Length: 180
Image 1 (cartoon, rainbow, N blue to C red):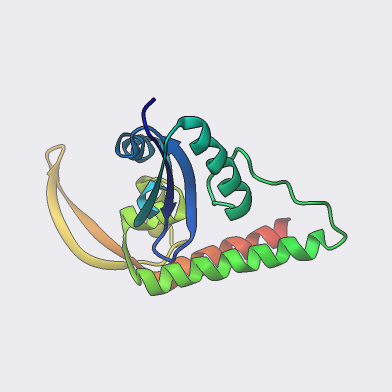
Image 2: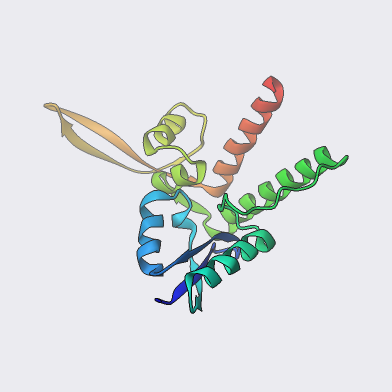
């Protein structure tokens, strides 16, 4: 029987993103690249080998239950209901916000439109629309002119700072509270 591997994907800040099992971790990594929204956040992979699939699957289940990776859906423990559920949720939201602020500002203080779109989980076109509509602050890095349908058109190349992303996210939070 072929050897089976348990793998863990980690972000730059050390957050455990995903735990999985595969006969070929490289092939599986390629599948994650094509089908997961979190693949771009992987900076470190740890691999543990097992003599058979059953042992690897048992280790995977235990690891997911105990280590709580951000993007695994199966085998996660369901927390017990608590009278402090609202406080726990607010604490979790605040911790997530703090992690995001840290990542935005300290890991990458300046973003291209593509990178900003990835952080916001929207398309490049939607990000440009937010910038051009004044909802998301940006810096014009340069302008270039192209002939488009027989006419010259000037295009802006934008950059977005980490603080501009945070301002935008906070404006969404304020809007949600007003309408929530």
